[in-house]
Image 1: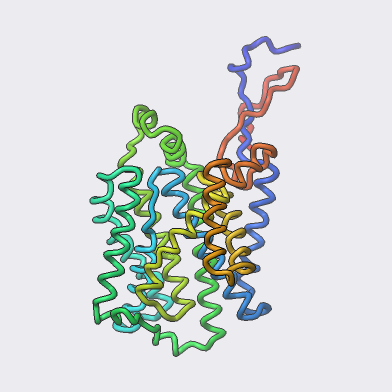
Image 2 (image 1 turned 60 degrees about the horizontal axis):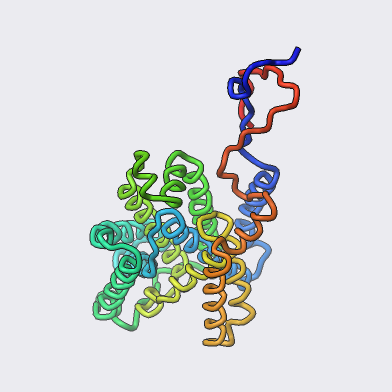
Length: 351
């Protein structure tokens, strides 16, 4: 007999994952052991390339959280890269901390910097906030350039890594890179799937409307800024642990912000998939065309401008408009009712 109840009164199945997201999760699960095993089958060049690509992905994901969800456009995230890198070198060289342990402990430094920095910057809005972040980064660069304890303008060399062989260094840095990727991408996915993710999405779409519905916009922006500072600091620790040397010009290089903007704007802002696509594109372009110098950077800038004007959703936005196949399923969808409604099992779990 046909069920005459209103469709809203009937329990419906909720789709939590899609076939494409399950496939993407499977590939991610496969990528982890592949990365961890690289020291036993890959050469040093391939390992360095994977470490560099991991840094690009993570720094872009952190910038995407800031600009794509919290609405905080920063051009000074290099401040946290440099501060974390210098903190690691100081702990290892001056205090005798093992470099790999120092790479974890140094993340306290960007967190300590982010609190007073945001206390000053949160009063600014739009382009003024962006300029303020750049000023913070420049102050950090100028301070380290004149501070003899950290080598002034000549920088520091990670002498403490001399006790490890090349193979041991590659193994340790690669495993740290893998953990960094899991924390950044997996953490972003977990956050955006939670109730805080709903608040972030509402804040991204309309912060005024989100505040009217009870979202503490200022508190949430501070927490995102703090998390992005620590995540960006992870990149500084891993990148310069691999490079074995840091200087003010390198650690606080404004090119880090340029890389973030290009990756996120071209890949797709406000998504998890976008920074992954943008990072792969930037990495490939850097390998193929980096030798052209200034011309190469001009082309990247024009590509970013073109995407901002013509396709604000980036490459992933263009793809998702035509194909509904998310790699990271953030939405829950009600499955359509069958033509002949029947009473479903109320104990059936959502898929």
